[in-house]
Each structure stands twice: as structure tokens, then as C-alpha cells.
Length: 259
Image (cartoon, rainbow, N blue to C red; front, side, top):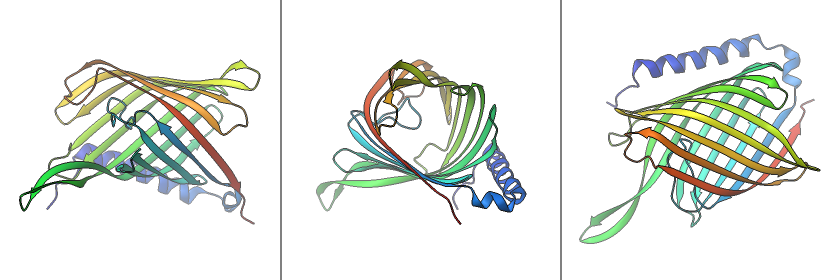
């Protein structure tokens, strides 16, 4: 029998489930007529950086992001090395618990698969075999808006790995800011997302700083983005002192209203 997540993980998942169910029951019939959003992005990058940004693929990658729904959204993310090998598949379900002009609270959960290539010997022949590790995670995301385009918030994620050789329990906590629109020139702007985060993986932990900078143009689907991550202090063996990437992002979005 596979081990169950520890009590803290159960608490997080219970909170997420209660928030979603209570607000689903409280929805008015008119809310069913609200627009359905379908959006996505295709990212090509010189270095695939993980959801936990102290880790990277270490080579070029392509990432497919999709999101569909209204208040409850399904947001799958498929990550591949540029040569076509799968890197990770994440199947997010997210729910907007509170969506006010000044304060927003989102919760989410996902199962995921992380792929890796291992070298084995079968019948005296050395071969590369692809294996996967299964994870389940939940997140809580509150944000307070200082202005329409400036917010501060925290992000908490906890995940559990199911394979014996996988990290069993991961805790990821960030303090972050979001500057969504910094004018540069006519129709051109920057987005800047700095954050400090604490990461604990089983018995190892560390503190890090990361930032995402995006250059974009109004009403234009292409943008250029870069992630920078610096280790402050850590005893996590696989964490790197400094990583960065440069990405080209194609974004699209459509809105549908049911009648």
C-alpha cells in the first residue's frame, strides 16, 4: 500500500475542497451565463525552468499552457524538451474563491507526471528507458491590489510524491509582487514579478530570490520573457546557485458566452 500524504497535506486539500464546494453551492443562476474563457500560450525557451524555479531542464524546451472555464478553470501544462521528449505534464484545476477589485483569493490542485530518462542494461544491451514519477499538489494564492496593475501577495504550494524514489513532501512558500504594466514607449510595456521564496523538500530546505521580466506590446500576441533565479542559502543538493532563461511566448485568448 502506498503511503498517504502527511496530515498537513490533508489539511491543505480539505481547505481547498471546502472553499470550492461552498462557493459552487452559493452561485446564482445568472452566474452560469458569464463568459467562458479559453486562453493559452506556447513558449519556446533556451532553458526550461521548473514550477520550482531553482530547478531547470538545463536545455531548450517548449511549453504548452491552456486554460478553459469561468470561475472554475482547467489549466493543463505540457512541457517538452526541444527534441520532443516529455519533461512534465501538470493538470491544474483552479477556482476563484474571491474576486474583488482589491483582493483576490484563488485555490487549486493538480496531479502531475515528471519524466526522466534512465540508462539500464537489458539482456546485456544498454538502453535508455523513460520513467515517470507521480505527484499531487495543492495551492492557496491570496493577492492584494494596491492599484489596478500592482499587487502583492503570497503563494503556498504543497505536494506529495508517490514513488519511493521521489521527493515525498515538498513545501513551497513565496512572498511576491506583480507589476503588470510598466509603460516603456507607445504601445510597449514591461511586466515585472519579483519574489522571495522558501523551499523545503523532505529534510532539506533553502531560501531563494527569483524574478520574471516580460517585454510586450499591446494587442500583439508575441512577447519576450526572462526568468532569473538566485540561491540565497540552501542544502538542497539539486538546487543551482544561479539560473536564467530567455523565452519567446505566443499568447492567445477567446471568450465565449452561453445563451
